[in-house]
Length: 370
Image 1 (tube, rainbow, N blue to C red):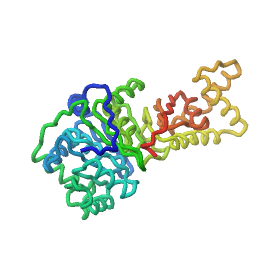
Image 2 (cartoon, rainbow, N blue to C red):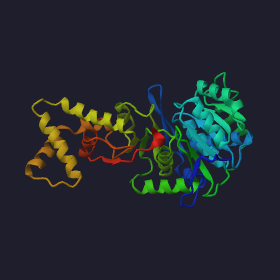
Image 3 (cartoon, rainbow, N blue to C red):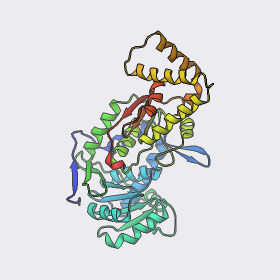
Image 4 (cartoon, helix red, strand yellow):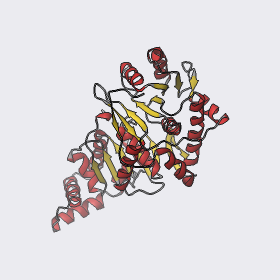
């Protein structure tokens, strides 16, 4: 059941998210898939481990009776368990309803009712308790699962993993026209039902625009409750990249030095902060040189946009490159090639990165991310 207010996006691609991962992830085996910061260090889950978690949770969902045509909702920040629940849901032929935990309870209730959600997952004891509190108002909602093992959860993520390991099930392969995800826009706008074919088309389009290799690290600081965030996640995992999960959608610039990402997806305010890091490095140089360095960075950014350089401009660029080599690249992790912003960036934010040969992509604002 999908509510009347949902706009269906069929897309024109073949294939589905389940078949691709079932075929591709085993090839990657020990390569890092997802990274999290725990106790001050980064901990990485390999693709093989991720696949085993998906298989176990898929079996857990099957034990609850989840199957084709059902809806599984998750109210959660970006985290490993979100990925596991997502692909396990797809593998049961069900559709995912991803909701932002920052939204109001009334928004969750509306989405759960309209989407016909059968199982809802909460990322904290507070969210799980709220979902259990509104369960009686959602006619098809049979089970509430807590990602954290708190007292408010009748079912937990770990319990579902254990159930799935005891009774594993083979993945069901959706058709390209089957709905993969339902994305809700609040308030008032119609939700979007995105088919596997439509999502695959979006992923392929994104992959064609980014030159990425297996093992390249990516940071996604865009909520996966949005269509764009989901497409970015699927694209990176299908490219064999290692997805680092920073805290929230505005991580500290120091995080990038630790991860050394090749591509960062984020909101404009994140990249504005990174631009401020470059300016901070400039301000540490001798005061007499700062105007020349800033001018050199602006000229270098113009060069990347095709502006011709005269002898004086070339001298300024060389000066900036000599005076700001490592200190500037360190905040970006030295390897950053793509900065993909979910909205327009002002020149003070974009130009320093362009001057460092970072490809800045400014996408149209997405209402799902607001």
